[in-house]
Each structure stands twice: as C-alpha cells, then as structure tokens.
Length: 341
Image 1: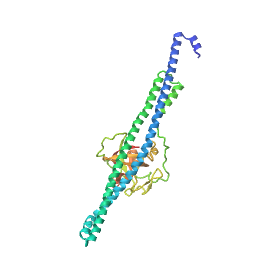
Image 2: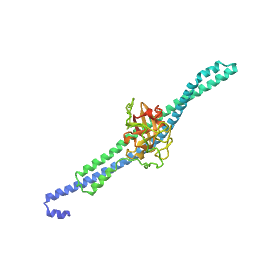
Image 3: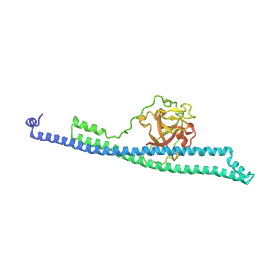
Image 4: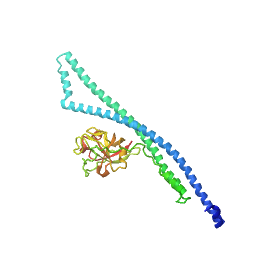
C-alpha cells in the first residue's frame, strides 16, 4: 500500500511509527551491508596471506622431507656398518693386521688402510651431524611458518562469526521475510576458508585400501611416554602401522590410493581414515608426527577403514622405523601428536 493511502486510513501516530520502523530497517540493512563489505575485504586479504604462507610451508616441507631422507639413509649406513663390525670383529682384524705386519712397508700400508676406514666413518658421523643440524633448522622454520598460518587462520575463521553477528543485529530490525536479509545471511555463510587445491580421488588400481587390519582392534594403545606440550594446532590421536614385509595382508609393494605412491619396507607415507571428512583432500599433504620427543615427517598417500576411524593415522614402514620400531607389531598402536601442513 502506498504511504499516502496508508496515511489516509490510519491515525497519524501509527503512520509515523510505521515510517520510523521502515527507516530503521533500511538503515540496519544498509549498515549491515557496509560492515559485510569491510569484513569481505579483510577476509580476502587474510586469505591471500594464508595462501602465501601455504606456499612457503609446502616449500619448507619438501626441504624437510629431503633432508630427513638423507639423514635416514645415513643412519641406515651407519647401522649396517656397526652390524658388520660386530659380526666380523673388524676392529680386532684391523689390530691383527697392524700387529702382524712382517715389514715396515706392510705396516705402513695396513695403518694407511685403517686410517682410511676410520676417516670414512668419521666423515659419515660428521655428515650425520650436519644433516641433523639442517633438519632441525628447516623443521624450526617450518614450525614457525605453520604457527603463523594457524594464527592467520584463526583470525580468518573468526570473520564468519563476526559476519553472522552483523546479520543477527540487522535481523532484529528487519522482518525475517526480507529478501535482502536472506542475501546477507547467505553472504555471511561464505566466510570460511577452504583450500584452493582441487580434491584428489582414490585410484581404482590401488591395492592397499581394502586391506585387513594387521594390528588387532583389541591391541592396547600405548600412550606417548613423552607427550610434552606442543605449540600450534596439533591433534592427538592413535596411530597404527601397516605395509612392508611384516604385514601379511598388504601387498609389498602395494599401490597406494593416490595412484602414484607405493607402500614398501622403506616408504615414508601414511594413510588417513576414510571416515575423515573430505579425506581425499589430504592426499599429497605433509604430516608432522611427534612421539616420545621425536618428530618425523611423512606424506599422506593412502587411506583405509582403520578401525572405523578410531585410528587417526596408519604409518607405513619407513615412518615407524624412523621412530625406532622394526616392524608393524613392534609399533602396534600408539598415541601420537600430529598436524597436517
């Protein structure tokens, strides 16, 4: 009804009250629209910062994975050398070769040979120390970048609550049937960050997904003996183990769900439960895992039923071996801290 017709049919006081209510509603909607525009600008700027930090995190994560691989290779070489020396009593052989020399030239050759062996071992030890230093430095940088991103994400996700509060305030002045109010509500719902990475799919040729659990569901969970407080957005969950020569139910090698990775006795991958919302979106992401004061980095490349989702991660052999466990059964099921990078 036009305002002139309304004025002719109702008392002047009621007309004034209706006019004031109409103007208040219009003002509330306009104010809400302006506030949402400001929030949208802040949201876009924060999203760009989060994406920029993610690019840095991805680069640092790859650096950490590369250094970790070199460090684990070196650790394996040193372990094999120690086993060889133990089995062959090489130290006593070296001493015998020196003490049993029949001439000065033979003694000189034997001493030179022993020196070279010892130098090689010393170089490997020094190399391991250097790699560990590089690993710790890269890990610290990665942690700092991830913590910074977590802080930005917290602010970013608070924009949705902020926008919802603006719309709720406007709704107290406006009729719920208002189309404009519905538009503002829909706009407020959009303020939640989502990764721009396209979602992956489970490769149809994968033969590690529909696997029988190598660790019995009744296996007691071993708590982390040194949980320690961890900065940042860490999760706590149960990790099991699978794959490799100690797992009779998973092909070795087995093709993982991402379609490009293989589960072997040395693979540094993990599986996530298929009950995890959007679990396929985690493929390719680096996960940081801590247990007993140690940190190991792995790549999400597989998925499984994993006790109906009661287990957060399933560790492949390279990962649980990096923690010092020889096979799936030695690892069993343990409580770990972890976060996806």
